[in-house]
Length: 193
Image (cartoon, rainbow, N blue to C red; front, side, top):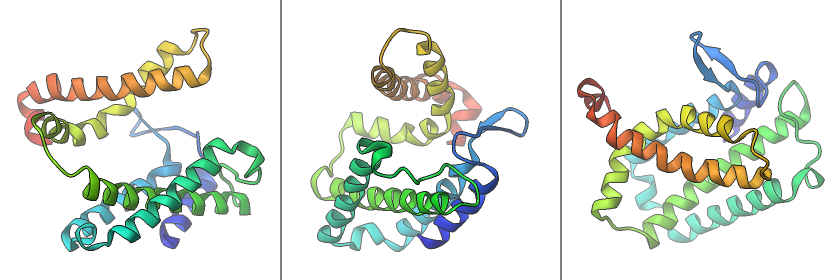
């Protein structure tokens, strides 16, 4: 957690949150979160190979989930009145603090939700297998889908939370539909993922 937090903080000195760059000239990327994404990807591989989530106790998993939910409540429902010193980037203590809190939030929710699903929602159906088979493609294609929806809703006279909920709901559905009915029908691409 310390290494990921420090890498995130260092990255955000030059690439603060909400600073998007055209990676390779055309892929819009927010580098502020790349250290977290990359490290969690590799840690996920390690956790799978070493069976960490099969051997972690349910009690420990629920403790991590409680920490994550508490941080969500404080950060996203407490607003700036709770953490006015958290900065989006730069060589400041507020940016370092935010990097640590975000990393703790991500780690605790990943561990907690995986254990919750392992213990309480562990089963398969035809529908869940279909979703599972498409989730990796959805990970790669969701950003353009979400950006399209955000631009589409931008000028509508709706509250921000309504736009957020519509974008979230439609983004999930459209990403899975595109993956299943478009991506997987293209001969070369269906074999890549």
